Structures are given as structure tokens and as C-alpha cells.
Image (cartoon, rainbow, N blue to C red; front, side, top):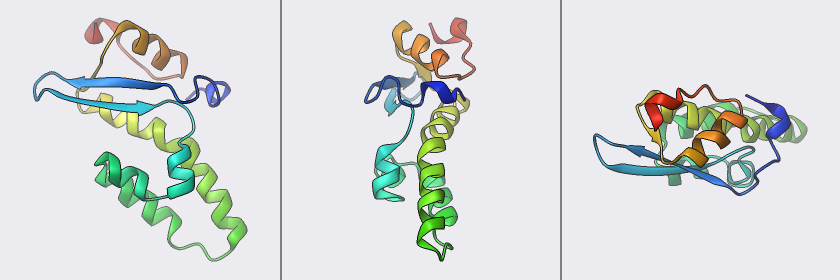
Length: 116
């Protein structure tokens, strides 16, 4: 993960395609502002059940409001990175060369030969 690019390309989404099933998914790069503001609902709306369970389990046992804020910030910083990494591990490929370059810029390990 490249922390210097967290705020770059804000709002830019990269597309992924599962060529076997024909599914197309997209994900924004950098901080997950929807996860920061809406918590577990962001992964649920993406159909990311494992991510929703992770966010819920990390944020549900906090007592202090300050600790809740700190944990919510940490979850927002790492959620998109984990989600994109899991999509790549499942066999999703990046949609085009521009998406490959953006993902590489954000620190993901992408084999460009497999995704072109």
C-alpha cells in the first residue's frame, strides 16, 4: 500500500472483470469515504460479505468515542486496499491499461501481462 497516494485520484474508480463469469465490478482507490461515514453498509452494498463481517467485527466492540473514531479512520484507510486485493486474488482482471497504471501507482502488485 502506498500511503502517499491515499488522497490522489479521489473519486476515481477502477473497473475489474471476471472473464469466466462475465461480472464487472468497480472500486474507488484510496480512502473509502463511504466506509468512514456509513461503516458496515458500504461493504454490504458492494456485496462484499467478508468485508462487511470484518468491518462489523472491528468496529462493534469499541466503548470510547475517541477509540471509535480512530478505528473508523483506520478501517476507511485500509478497506479499499483489502477489497481490491481480494478481487485480484479471486481472478478479477483490470479492465484497461489506464486502470492497471492507476492500481500500480497505488502500490498494488499487478502482473500486467495477465491483465492486458
